[in-house]
Amino acid sequence: MKTWPIEPPGIWIDVRSSPVCSPPPGLFLDRDGVIVYDKGYLASPDHVELLPGAAEMIAEANRCAAPVAVVTNQSGIARRLFGWSEFTDVQREIARSLDLVGARIDAVLACPFHPECTENYGERQAHWRKPGPGLVLEAARALNIDIGTSWLVGDQTSDIEAAR
Image: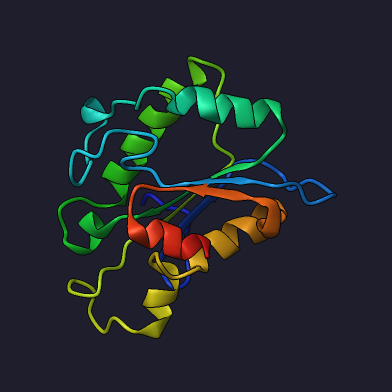
């Protein structure tokens, strides 16, 4: 049986780097529309296409020792359009594509909840789904990021609200 890095209450948390001692500023990125083209419910690695400049931005953050965390809502999971297996395949392809230019992501946090598609959706799930702060706060905790000096890049109003 395959296991996923799912933490209660059902959030994907995959931390790939150790936190540093002195909290640095970090770079929080939405995935679809910021790192890769938003093609609507990205479920196949064959459809992964990095946006121009995304890999270079991540590589520059890596050179500056700024941890990079992807914080992404994935309502396609709540809608049962794909599952964690497909999400994993897409993430592997993104990591492979970034690696080709010397860029890496330090953590990926994904929220599978959606108010219209998650049974008993409430405050607990809303905390994790952007604009809720859960993904950003957990990434900052896991990587020891100074959230007050960090940046969040997103393409939706909910991303900007999460940054606030």
